[in-house]
Length: 142
Image (cartoon, rainbow, N blue to C red; front, side, top):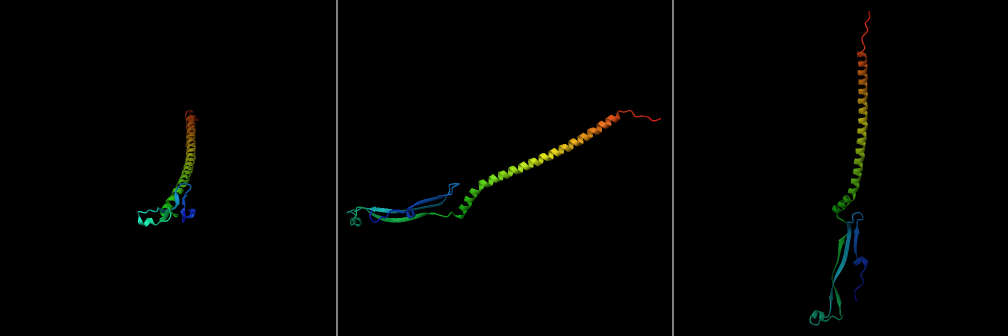
């Protein structure tokens, strides 16, 4: 068509920038133009004088979108990206702490058992010693 230029990517393109991990759009843009196609019409006086078979009349041009997220959405996006890593690190820390507590409890339990066993052994030796010498008749001296 005469008078209409070919669209350019910069002026007429649609773009969407996505955050690669979550797939959340962080920038969106669209540009468009609404045109009215007019043909000569002898009945309607304003269109009766058109010389071309089709005339394109631009009605309006619009460019919408955003390139920067508002601060609350940026904060939520950062939180959504950081939460899984924080949970994994917390789980690893909890497992490590549990392992240390279990190890310390096992060591303390083993030491206690050794002390109880040692006390029991000593008590048994004393009882055997006492029983051994309790049954021996005393010797009288003249």
